[in-house]
Length: 407
Ligand code: OVM
Image 1 (tube, protein in one colour):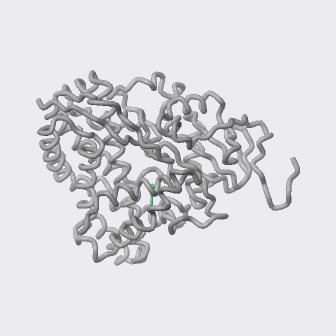
Image 2 (cartoon, rainbow, N blue to C red):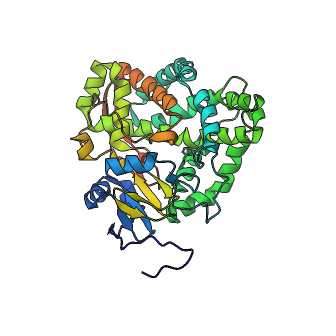
Image 3 (tube, rainbow, N blue to C red):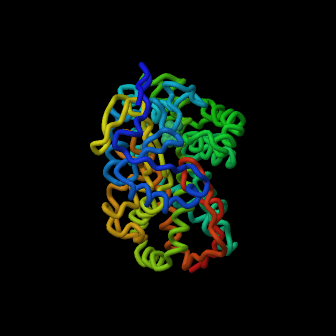
């Protein structure tokens, strides 16, 4: 291969197997399990010519690549667009799409705002709200698990926790889907997201202003860090935007996927009813088994290697978190959904310095909901076919017709 000065093409030759596939094909996104299995089968790392990227899906190389933040940076974007070469669709996130030392400062603020102690203070509202919503859906009997339960719960408790004055459920859910579709290639999903982005982003950005937030919520805690001189007011607004980017669609997806897991595994629902204390480990197993965030990418910022294979600077590496979470070499029997598995080390929240900073609040929401359900719901049945909603980064349901039986 001829090397042009200043341009370092991904060298498909090297010794990395080429796989002519589209990870973002809507059929793959709607049912990623076979694609994940083939990705793992093809090697520690594969080259995908369609996007000139590498992909990893075995547990070890995925975890290693994802957590080596010095070699595989986030500041060049965590999707297929290289922010060094292309202008991002919105001002980059100052916690997600950034490296140390800038990342260290914002991460410290967000870790404090989302600390276990703060989340504990939200537990009562999570619990009472879960009970109220459950009483309503149990009256209905037959529901859409996605809208009636998965969307209803986080869109009630999360904006209240943040302290938002104005709540627009559709904009909150759709903004997440837009942000996550934006990390994919320029396919139909991304184009549709970009078409809606101006309108939805305008609403979201306005909602992040200090005067749109109460004085006792997570948002005000972020602005308090600005008052203390840790960050600027503009940075505080961008960190509130991160709440609204990553805090709604993700938990909506986690709940929908949990309902799907239990509807398909009734003996596991019996196990949770028998021991509601399993709510927390059950959620970890839902995360491992369904990977609500299925894929994020990194960018090699230097010439490096993955599992002994050379990787040139500027190479994008797709990290298939969902594939790693289903790797039999790591999990033994990954296809079995087992709520007492306690899958320590799953990658659904990522790994390393960029690991989900909101994971405590996500766990708090799911614990409240699953515990309240274990006390009230005798059985969960599919009342029709579940339908998945293809998204370039999120593995989420579109429809989940359910029949719920009250105790
Ligand atoms: C953000 C953010 C954080 C995590 C995930 C995410 C792409 C966005 O800070 O905006 O979704």
